[in-house]
Length: 486
Image (cartoon, rainbow, N blue to C red; front, side, top):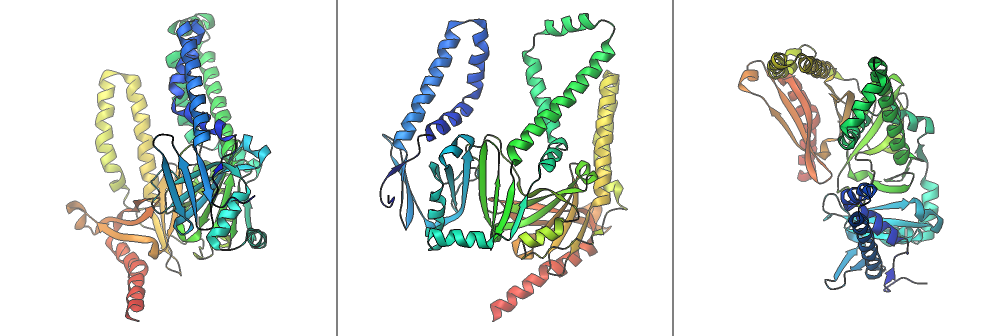
C-alpha cells in the first residue's frame, strides 16, 4: 500500500507511549495520590481515578488527531483539533534521523522516528513519528539519498566493516564503577527518610540497645548494596546490547533494554573526541570514549537516557586508539605523547581553595567539632583533586595538527582531541598578578550541541600558548589564506 500523499495514523501502541509520557509529567501528583490511598481517604482514590481517566482520554485524542504523510519530497505531520498544526519538513533540511524502540514495540516491529533539522530547538526533535513500521526509516533514508530502499540495505550490509559491541561483563563493570550512582542513592535515601516517621527510628534504636555499632555497619553495608544494585540496573537499562558501527561516513549507535534507541551521527558533525580514564576503571585497564557533536540532542520523552554521546562506553586501553582510527579515520588519532605544563605550579591551583576553605573549617570548629571534621575532610579531598589537576594537565599536537588537551575532571583523566577547523576561537588570558610571570590561561571555543563551549588549560606558560597558536591555529589560517588566494 502506498503511503505517498495519504494521511496515515500511527500504530495503536502510540496510545501507551502518550500515556506514559503524560504520567511522567504528572508523576509527583500521581505518587502523592498513590501514597495517600493507604490512609483510606475516598477523595484520594477519586482524584487518582480522575487523573488516570483524564490522561487516558488525552492519549486517545492524540492518537486520533496526530497523523502524517510521507512523500518523495517531504514529510508532513498533522496535529490538533481546534488549533490545528501542520509541520512540513523537506528531506534536504534533515540533519539527523534517530529511532527509538520501546520494549512493547518489538512484537509489532514498530519504532519511533525522531527527526532533527538545523532549526531544531535544543532538547527536542522537530518531528516525531511516534509509532510506525520499521520499514519507514529505510524509506526516509532512500528519499534523502535518492536511492531505492533495497539498494540502501545492500550497501549497509556491505559497508558494516567496523563494528563494536559492549560485552556483558563490561556493562557490569560500568555499573559498579559509576561514581554518579552514589549521588543518586543519597538523593533517593534523603527523599525516603523524609517520609519515614520519627517513631520508626526511636523503635529501631530501642530494639538494638547496645549494638549501635553493628547497626551502623549494617546500614553502611546495606547502602553499598543499594548503590551497587541501582547502578547495575541503570547500566543494563542503558547499555543492554550496545552496538556501534560505521557505514562509510556515518556512525550508527544503538542501545537500551526496555527503550531501544538508535542514533545516526555523520562524521562531519563530530566536533571533538574525549577519551575518559576514570580512576576506578583505569584499574581494570578500561577507558570510555565520548563524542562531542554539533546539533541539538533531542531529549523529549526520555525516561532514562545517556546524557553523553558514547562511542565506546568501555574499551580496553590497549585498543582505544586503534579502534578510534577505524571508526573515525579522518582524525588519524595516535596515542598522544603529552607535554605536562603545570607540575611545578601546584600553589596556583591550591591558593584560592585554601583561602576560602580554611576559614570555613575554623568557623565550623568554633560551633561543632563533628561538622569541622567533615568540612576538613571535604577540603582535603578538594585540595587533593586540585593537586592532581596540576600534575595531569598537559597537551600534544599530532602530525595532522590534531590538538590534544589533557585535564583532570571529577576523578577522571580526560584527553580531548579537536581539529583546528572545528575551533571557533582560540584565546589566551592572564591577570595583573600572573602577567609578570608569563603565566596565563588558554581556551579553545567550539560548538557542542547548539551552544559554544570552552575547553582549555590553566596557569600555563606563555611560550606553550604561543607554540599551540603557531603549530595548531596559524597553520589553519595560512591554509585558509592560500585557498582564498587561489
